[in-house]
Each structure stands twice: as structure tokens, then as C-alpha cells.
Amino acid sequence: MNELFHVIKVGIADMNVVQPPHLIRTSGLGSCVGVVIFDQMKEVAGLAHVMLPDSSLARSETINIAKYADTAVEALVELIIKAGGRKNWLKAKLAGGAQMFSFQSANTDMMRIGPRNIEAVKRELERLRIPVVAEDVGGSSGRTIEFNPKTCILSIRTVNQGVKEI
Image: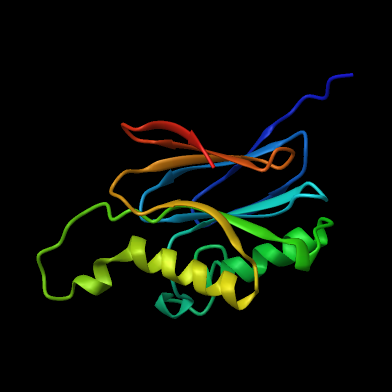
């Protein structure tokens, strides 16, 4: 019997968890980083669309934890464990973090959002001892990613570069 599958969409500054036969997708990754964390044996995966590296950049006391690398990664791990994933079996795949614009000003480090997002996501994964098994980060083009928790393949469609799988 064939099961119908759905593509669970994750918006900007959002996160969700998926199990087969469903897939999970996010679009519009420019300087944002899409981080997929999964337990291959339990076939459970989560995806967060991280916009900024650090929640200290928030302008209000109430923050969207999915928006910042320092809060999103740990919250995503908790969702995956709640869905049946096992902490010590988790692995990660990353995509995004492009430098979409070039700047000529002196304060260029603040404008390096993509590279800073990549560094922040990797720092959180390292802190939580989750290995990054594949990545497609950097560059200057936007991406759309889709993950299949059954095959653990991350499909990446990059603007003007086609589709690749990692």
C-alpha cells in the first residue's frame, strides 16, 4: 500500500520535525542557514531556517528561538528527541550562509551575516557534539533545500547552478 507523502514546509525563522514518508523543505536560503539534524536509524529529522547568529541581536525581550543559531539548534534537538530521535545518534547537514551582497564600509564584519551564521551553527553543533556529515555553504547564491528522513539525502537547488544531493 502506498502512503501519500507531504512536504512539510519550514518558513524563515521557523523549524519543524518530520518522519517518513514525509519530506521537509525550506526555501529562500540566502545568508540564512538551513540546518538539518537527523537520527538515521529512527528515521526522524528536523530542519531549522536560521536567520541570525546570536539572540543577543534581538530587539525585544520575547524572541523567536528558531531565528537565532544559539537558540534554534538546541531547540531543534529537543524537538527531534521528543519525536523519537536519540541524542547520541544525531548527525547534521547544512546549507546556505551565502554572502549575498558585497560591502565597502569599514564595518564589514557586521555585514558578513552568512559566514557568521555558518560559524554560529557549527559552534552550537560542536557544543552539542553533533557531527556535521555534509555541507553546502557559502558562495553568493540563494538555495532551496529538501531533506528525506528515509534516505537522509539533502537535495539542494541553487540559483543558476542546478540541483545537487549531499
